[in-house]
Length: 345
Ligand SMILES: Cc1cc2nc3c(=O)[nH]c(=O)nc-3n(C[C@H](O)[C@H](O)[C@H](O)COP(=O)(O)OP(=O)(O)OC[C@H]3O[C@@H](n4cnc5c(N)ncnc54)[C@H](O)[C@@H]3O)c2cc1C
Image (cartoon, rainbow, N blue to C red):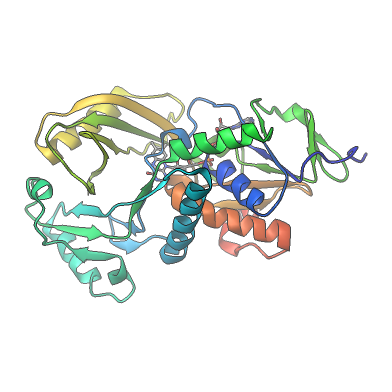
């Protein structure tokens, strides 16, 4: 059976980071897009702190394709901000306080490596707020880090979709998907392609859900203006308010905020800043990670595609993934072998 006539070029299920970035990229390329989304409990993007950090701090090595990802992400979020007359992309250096002399030594060594030295350096500059923190082994800096206001980005794009009658605030159940010979139909919409951007709610081979929790806190008088990391990160939002995070848990991922995580994050923060910390909010979500920590992209049927596996660095990865997928679906370019969903069978 053939679809009557297509209402859209692409149907997207899910408007987290994956669905947002993909639909914006497709629209920029002139495609008629419709997005189905309902806010399910545990969704990841709504609680993401939005950090963009090209360095794996535990090992002082660059993240996967750091330079390429960072350049594409910065350009994408800046452009979308211009389009919506909002600032989503906030460059902000990240300061890593060394927990041991050994980690300080490794960091110093990396500052001499030609590739890594473009991202990391030792920090010996004077900064009143930072100097007040305990740091017997010193600190290093990642200058090219940033944070993205993911909540504002999702809300602005949602408004835009709504205004263009391109949003359906409905949950898509398996039985709602009609498979025609030449495309897909869902409720009042039909298109030659559907992209599943359902994050941790999807059933995709290789997908591993990882629970994460964080806090919003007030720390009067601290006055940090850079992201600080020591076991946990502290992201300054202004007016003495910070985001603190995040935990990682692989069991019982849908169980919601836990006392244990709250206690852990609060304890770490108090030890980091040696001040009183007031908790304003406690947030929790489930990251859609993958077994090999690479995204999961590609076709899962003639007219069905998946965009998932953004894991714990979705903000930096999503614009590159959307470019890959659009290049593949619209221009016939091969997908990078490292991200193809079929690698998990
Ligand atoms: C605590 C925490 C902190 C994090 N911090 C960072 C960070 O600092 N930097 C970073 O880069 N990443 C961070 N991440 C990871 C980041 O949030 C994820 O990589 C990213 O948000 C995943 O986006 P997604 O669109 O794949 O999934 P989601 O954001 O979960 O989006 C899926 C969407 O689809 C909807 N949906 C699902 N199924 C259906 C259906 N059948 N019908 C209709 N709608 C549906 C859901 O309700 C949701 O809106 C963090 C994650 C957590 C949990």
